[in-house]
Amino acid sequence: METNHTRLVALEAICSVVLDKRSLSSIVYHQDDSALTKSLVFGTIRFYHQLNDIVTGLLNHSLEKEDLDIHCLMLLGAYQILYSKVAIHASIYETVNVLNALDKSWAKGLVNAILRQIDRDQALLKQQIHYSHPTWMVKKIKQNYPDNFEQIFSQNNIQAPMTIRIHPQYSLNEYQQRLTEFGTNAKTVNVAPQALVLEKPVSVYDLPDFESGSCYVQDASAQLAAHLLAPASQERILDACSAPGGKTTHLCELAPNASVVALDSDLDRLDRVKQNIQRFKLNNVDIIQGNAQQQDWWDGELFDKILLDAPCSATGVIRRHPDIKLLRKPKDIVNLVKLQAQILDNLWQMLKPGGTLLYATCSILKSENELQISQFIQGRQDAEEVKINLDWGIKTAVGRQQLPSNEFDGFYYAKIKKIM
Image 1 (tube, rainbow, N blue to C red):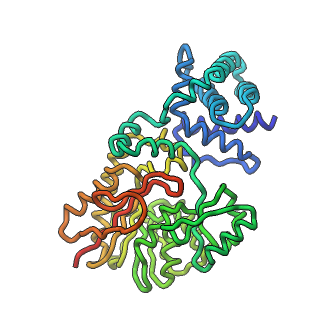
Image 2: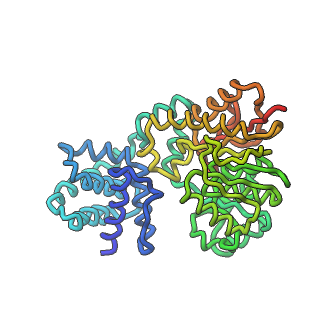
Image 3: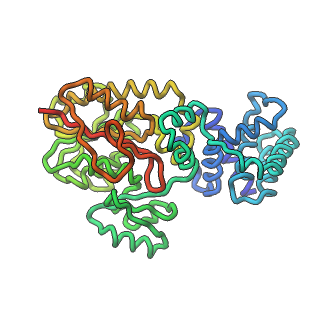
């Protein structure tokens, strides 16, 4: 009964993404739902494009619209056979039995036949190269990175590590030792001085002193932002598009006497900023709801430094959010590039002469990154690049680009100074 429930809950989540175009982050699981449930969901979505090609190729004809949940069920079964550690007989038997709960027992023969064929073919299927990305994305990434696309696709199809940022009040080495005592090994990252990469994911509540602000779950690439901006005491700093507050809290850790404005357009996501600020007991942050491409929220006082974590395609964090491969469309990139340019133009007016703007995205697409910033700098006489001298990523026309790798999410940074 439990295993059947696990697959039914997983199927509902998969259908939400595939059929209803909902994001994985919007799906709320019941506290009783097992880790297996979530792994089945993420795994099926991660390999959706490959699994869909396999199942579709075995069907004599497409299912009716009202029966597309059966198609998704076959994807779930195919994932278990090809990628999970679940025994084959259990994968097939339990998946087929989900049809009872769907009131579609008539499809048992079809689903059973398809899954058994996949089982027979699995050796051949595993030999075939399939990047499991949408065609447009495969083409774009190959164009942008002709020498690195295989690394990108490979990294996108594995689970990302859990990385935490240790508060400066804690010794990194001592906290690492405490984790070891709790049974969790972790390693440091040379370029990110507060980062620990955990050997395996754990609940945040299993992290020592988490609720009192010992650490923050944040990828090592994202941890570079605050250090690159180098906040100082008494400076007025804007964290644009700040939710959920990871970079805001980091800025405050490094410069507790700076004045930080955390801006975001999403009121619900700003609640998460408030929660994080409260957990870290910060009192130097002003939270404002507003659009970064507009000025109706601004009081007219210029900023010494601006961190723009720009809205982007999130193509650098697909391994954390595999639904991006299903939900993101080519037209989205065009619209995002326009929005990024509008935000850059707007925020530049709010920066003091001599001030610094750090542009960041979790994208790997050049149109959102080096091409965007190259065009921005070329279009004005009061902007110049500040070189980022880090042993991180690859140097691009402007800024530095990290591709998804073992320790780092795909990320881009460019540092721009406003000339006096």
